[in-house]
Amino acid sequence: MTSSAYTRYEVLRSFRNWRFVVLTLAFPLVLYFVVASGNRHHTFDATAFPLYFMTAMATLGTMAAVISSAAIIAAERSAGWTRQMRITPLKPATYIGAKVLTAYLRALLTIALLCLAGTALGVRLSAREWLIVVGLLLVGLIPFAAGGIALGHVIGADASAPAVGGIVTLFCLLGGVYGFQIANSGAMFQVIKALPSYWLAQAGKTALGGGWPAEGWIVVAAWTAVLVPIAVLVYRRDTSRV
Amino acid sequence: MTSASASHGGIVLSRVSKSYGKVRAVRSVDLVIAPGETVALLGPNGAGKTTTIDMLLGLTRPDSGSVTLFGMSPAQAVAAGVVGGMLQTGSLIEQLSVRELVTMVASLYPHPLGVEEVLQLTGVAELADRQSTRLSGGQAQRVRFAIALVADPDLLLLDEPTSAMDVEARREFWTSMRAVAASGKTVIFATHYLGEADAFADRIVVLAGGEIVADGPATEIKAKVGGRTVRATLPGSDVAQLAELPGVTSADRHGDAVILTCGDSDAALRALLGRFSGARDIEVQGSGLEEAFLALTAGEDDITSEGQDVR
Image 1 (cartoon, rainbow over the protein chains, first blue to last red):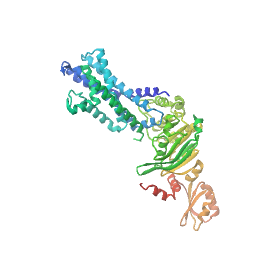
Image 2: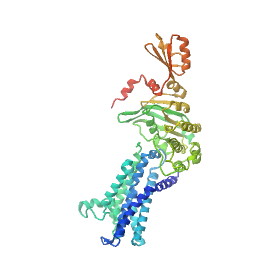
Image 3: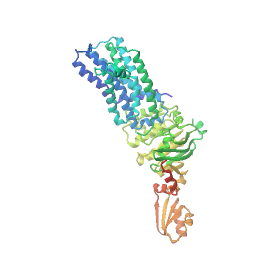
Image 4: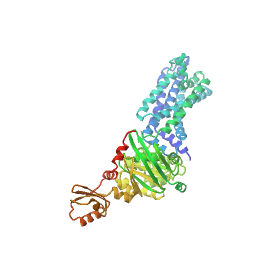
């Protein structure tokens, strides 16, 4: 059984939906250009603003790119397509694999465009620094990719867009993407550090000289261990008419 | 695959029940379908047709009883790729052409039919490069049939496959269905058109209120549910005698009026006029399906009201 054709058409299909792709990519990119070009020569937290804001937008943009799987899945469910696929031998791993792949391709495109935009505004990083930032962003996105799939199978098509927007906004706030942390110490900070959003933001901030300690790996691994089975479970149970 | 499956005795539903809250959608249904049979599930809306098909496809789990397809559970049969299904609701996904969509689905099956072959067979070859969301209702329905068929399944389950089609599309659809059924597949389709059930099924299973109320060869069921009613004024007649007239399946009287439910109303009329010359005010009516279901389920009122009791 070759599922490669299935995966190929899933990817093809998601990128032919150019309105969706353009809007997903355009939001962080336009925001970056508008804000960073105006503050091109400023510094923030002792960092050149274009570099700082590039990492922030990379966190926000990639998070939105992968969580937006929820909107796509919710639409497919309401069209009855998910049920149609459920009566084929499509394996959950192939289904989820294809969804994760398309989500990551959107995220990679977002990163690539932001890196180009950053370079245009004078951001200079070494090859090694680029690799670390991009690599850690991709790791940090795993829980969000799983969460997006799980969300898509429990939410209605009409509620999916505001839900995705709200979740991204909330997690960016909790991750400190907007330039401040809600808390820098105490119990609240411990909670923030136990969320995957903090470490996705930290992944971006490695470009600013931030670290990614073992704690980051542990938190991401734990959320992955929780959310991937949930995504598989809700997909398996989702056979009802919507 | 077909020969191996045949040795496992086809499709078996054994005392299958399913409720949604207080609604008992399917009640203790027993049904055995042999490999190669074409069976129509005939019934009005709410009869339990879709619930039955969803249970056969593993989309709905019965509350009690068991469902086996060729000796496998529905989930196993679906995973093995021996089942193709066309659901009642559902549209096609965006951004793929008809050919791409069928190719994508074909790739999921172990032994699919050729994509071009299926496009030809289902009459959508000329639409192959069209976006799958830019089709008429009937065209989309045929593409959905192509998606079910490309699996080359041993069992094809179709839930009201012609519901979005006009008369012409319906005719074309059944023409291609005939070719499929002739290839030895087991076909189960739900419909509320007696004409469709009669024309395309070997066997008709009539569902009403979640129960099987009739099951038999298409001709037999047609005589039962698709017959005509002869009404006449005939004072002092014997109902038992009337019921034995040729072409009459049952007789009933209300005062001076007699109502003959007929499989063959022509034969019944001739015999009626021959033997009961006093019959007058004769009316012949085609009995509607709803009426036929009522006739079939009549006398089961006790069971019905008991069944609606909330546990």
